[in-house]
Image (cartoon, rainbow over all chains, first blue to last red; front, top):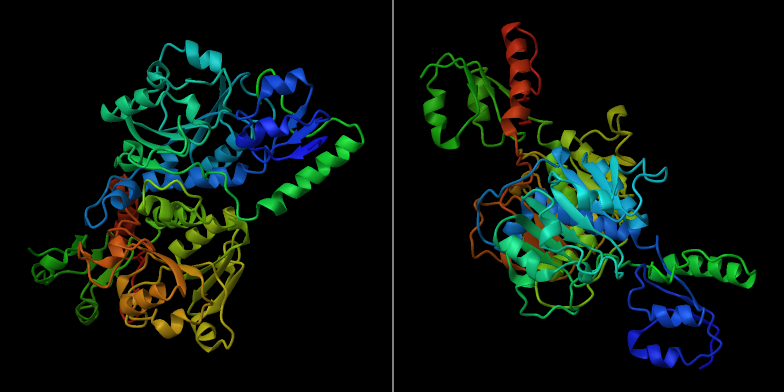
Length: 277
Length: 277
């Protein structure tokens, strides 16, 4: 094949796809692009655009489902059906969500949390800006988070950061302990951002109360993994952003970008190949 | 004992409690009062007030958890952990909730559904009124529902009607088939409103897609019941209205009613003993 534009990408076909010597632009169907050969793209000046924004509401709905399941005591009930006991429930309107990643998806998650009456704190590379004031009560930079002397207090720690060199292994024991004990951990970003063995230890020690994991260091997750079967964990198979009508949602984005491409205008959702998102 | 006012009620102690010859007023801690001896109360002119309004947000959160679990494909995944397959997901913003019961709880459920982008149709005894226009796009009366020739179309059928003689066995096969096939059934009202054998048949026939049941004809639900273990059903042990800080929420309501009682004013949330709610 000798395409100039590719819509979509498959890791298993990457070598074949990269044979297109005229390749100028790849439009990804996903928001995350960590599975692309970014160095090769940079070397060959191939433009890469994401589907960022498309999945936001769906991922926010999934996070909302996790969060309300936890607060309404549904996790222990569903994990152990048949027991007629009152589970612990939690007062959503008193809670704080600490959201790592304040892009389209993080903002939408914060909007849902706000509707539920929660306080929202964002964590990103640069701190608060005008685009974030509506959805976040507070935004701190990663640097502030790293250097804080007191522990942060949150009921939910939600990861939606992209998978990059900078976020690889970010949630290790040290960083997860920078937040006071008793929180639930939600990962709808990338499995590679979490040191799974550290997360398991913190769950076993009851430092972290529960975890809702949609992404894993290794995917697909082994059917025998304790992550599937622990009563403290709800695991789902990388589905948080699935949508019922993908094409209907995706094609307008591609059409718009195609027009821009043909008119030689700057593309929407263009990836900075040096940072990887 | 010889109390004039009783706060709370226990079925197992009803005989004892009714010995109080001076008993004038009972303030229930629950919204539903179908477990009270209403005829006896009427005969003796004992006033009964409910905790209606207190549980609304919590029940709405539980319904929201059910609904988003279903739409995000979480039910089959959690019911069968270990399988790395994409489940069916559903587009919330295209959906309709048919909500039976438009009191405090029904309205709050509708408010959540609206936030999620859904269309909300209420069903009650009298149809639309001014207090309902914000949360419901449409309200029909039970009589209209009963007499409609075409099937109603809804993605979620949510029952929050009180347990009364009028609602006993309401959701039988005939009425559940007045709504077009493919919907999910949510019951956070009373188990007695549903003919469980009919519901089971409609689920087995795939007429009803799934069910989220918090209340049952017989409670506690038998640990071996298929309602706990079917992959089409999420069953929870009558917990939809549980709250983390019940006293903090309840005491202001009681204080307020106590003042009214002492001043001989009309009590808040007074039950009409003839209709039972």
